[in-house]
Image 1 (cartoon, rainbow over the protein chains, first blue to last red):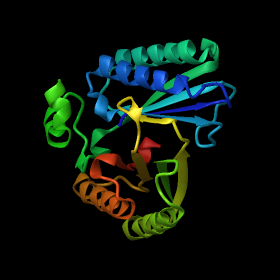
Image 2 (cartoon, rainbow over the protein chains, first blue to last red):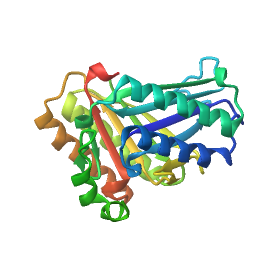
Image 3 (spheres, chains in turn cyan, purple):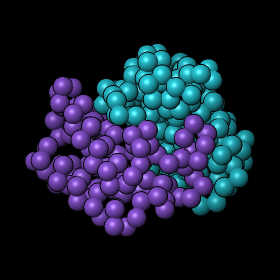
Image 4 (cartoon, rainbow over the protein chains, first blue to last red):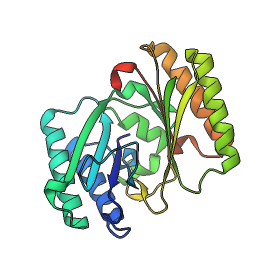
Length: 135
Length: 106
């Protein structure tokens, strides 16, 4: 968590574009929130029934830990929308990006309840010490 | 029915393990919430899943409780859920994300 799930029309996002957008999603989320990259999942689908496009060519849905400000969420939405536009060539008006808050205490990752935003250091040191050493 | 969504990387979990996990998820929902699980098994296509910008080996398992869950109960339930998942798949604890949400999170 966060989990960013991107549904798109067939062929709208190429296999070559996916890793670039995923890298942007990871960077943007971490830049805006201060979260470590190890938490960020970005999955891509085509015409996935669990995430209807509702007339858009791409719909990126981010399930993020609760506690982010409205300004942070707006920044995430705008930057990720721009990334999809840049790498996939989809017009901005055909790209929908939304986020949904999920309380950290509802999530188990690495065998422990997720830390609240800003309290990741102890969790990281236990589960991903290599990430701490790189920081 | 208890909504349950499993997002897995295509090719990572065999059909036999998928069937076993669905059976265990249903038994877990029955035991915990008294209802069957309505399981949506979603495969992330090849070359389409990324964790920390690298090809992902992660699975996400979410279950929505019919009533708010006491946090003292949620932790052990999540551990139980993730333990039977990794026992079946051979994944590590770092490759499984478990979520038990309250109904308001829908």
